Length: 420
Image (tube, rainbow, N blue to C red; front, top):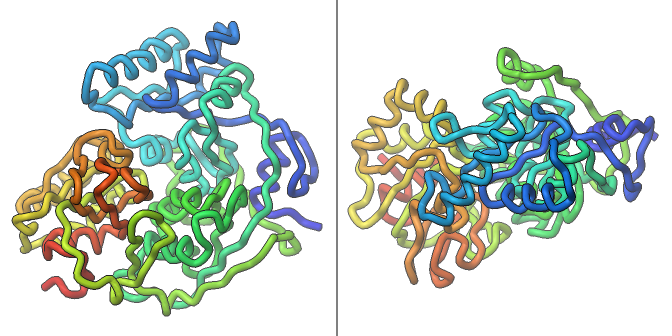
């Protein structure tokens, strides 16, 4: 029996010719990631274990992106722990504010992660890198500490669910709509500790940015990893930026899956996830009249240049509703710079939007856009749990950048089709 792509990567990294779901393995990791919330604990555990030197200073990435730019003294102290450890260990992948970005947008941009890598990160959305054909997953800070010491991590080989997307996309339907629809179909625990393999003609035509959006939200379905087989689009993205050699794995024709789910994308409308779970999805035609106070466009899910282009296309010549705050969060400094060069920033600022430095900010209820009691937000982020963006009595709806931009103009959740 052949293996699928997730199994092949874990087999290669654990020195085995073949692995089966349920098998436990110790594997060599290519990158260990942590941020300003999770790294301080990992560093503390690293030192408590008596470690004095990381296993490889080129294979650890520290990215202060959650409460940065520092919002208060406590967050400044957290960031300082990363800065001091990176200096002490001479880490090559520590990113200070001028070169920083939201971690899951930044590392692919820098070429730090490539196809065939095994990546663990002390952040649940580390699964984003599966879009490049890497096995990438979130772990706890103690697992990250162990990997920083040894370069290894343990895994239980996951079952894999294959998702095949066929048909022609409707106007304004994007990768965000596809993954929201998928989560709405299988539920937030529908892929619990499973590898989600995204395939089919629609996926093959998606940009790397679109694939990252889908992989990013695999965790919202409970997935261990969300992965797409690398192809020419992947290679084009990696060329000129990859820091190390890549290896392109593909599933065997006789690979075994727990199940295979097919979707006819021609029947999928733009989607909106209602509070307080990403699985509470509805097509835009059935959303109804929901007024909003805030629209957030950005995050590790949808803060890439193609997302900002969509928002600018809809905003051009329009104005943000006078009772709505529209906040823009580019994923990285380079994305921000590209948006300036293309005139996107000017278009959005003229429309009444406010730009933030690259940061996770409001997505985790940290800063730069917290909701008050009773307020409603539409956001291109990945989670809408109770209190996720501020008050536990606020409400967050998830959508694509197109719907978020249209809603900012209308003052209510609206299809971009209705914006003139």
